[in-house]
Image 1 (cartoon, helix red, strand yellow):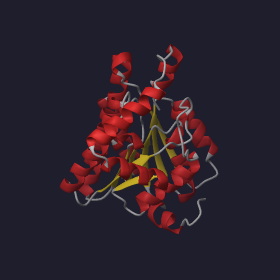
Image 2 (cartoon, rainbow, N blue to C red; image 1 turned 90 degrees about the vertical axis):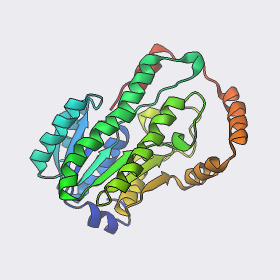
Image 3 (cartoon, helix red, strand yellow; image 1 turned 120 degrees about the vertical axis):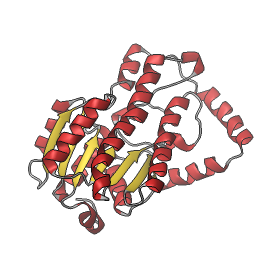
Image 4 (tube, rainbow, N blue to C red; image 1 turned 45 degrees about the horizontal axis):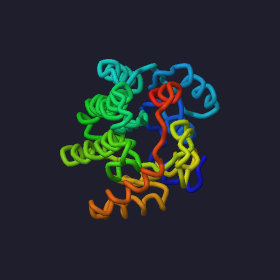
Length: 278
């Protein structure tokens, strides 16, 4: 169990928690970190066998696991899964919209298949999850929605513009809903680089945070009811500095940096890895 866990125990114990993208990466780490608190889990991803493996590894805890193979890009499938989990658990206290993929969107290497997958997973998949869960939270006037953004949301990053778009859109969506639904907690989390499969081939990653440490930081941020949380600390400082840069200075700096870091065209294997959603 995480250090300084009193705030976690108070907030998370006995909660009913839906997590998308639970078969690997952050979703897997979050489930492991929450399991000691007697959580009723609803785990969604396309890889049902991996979620079952995760649940089996946590049988020794007081938590229970409801599992559904589901592609979050499919709105009807998401709504059906959320409704079924709500019926199973009796309520949904926290919805963690975690599923996401990365995808390049360089003009020179534009790939509509990758871009469509990124938009449908990161943006539409999050909207499907949020709306389906709010349908059950709003009548109770109680619940928490967590959206996973990215450090890439800081500005429009060259060759990653579509990915940046999807991640800042999540923050804007939750900000909008928080004004409309003040009785619901909305938290947007922008991680830096976390040691998960999504960054395995990224040679430019820095200040990489272990997945279990990332899960602990995120769970504390939600328990403290943060509206927006960026981690690690050095990445948070860098995020705010970059946001403050004048457009001309930012654009000039990015041109120089990405000219040096320009990558060759992706292989078919790399494309499949990018579009393999949780």
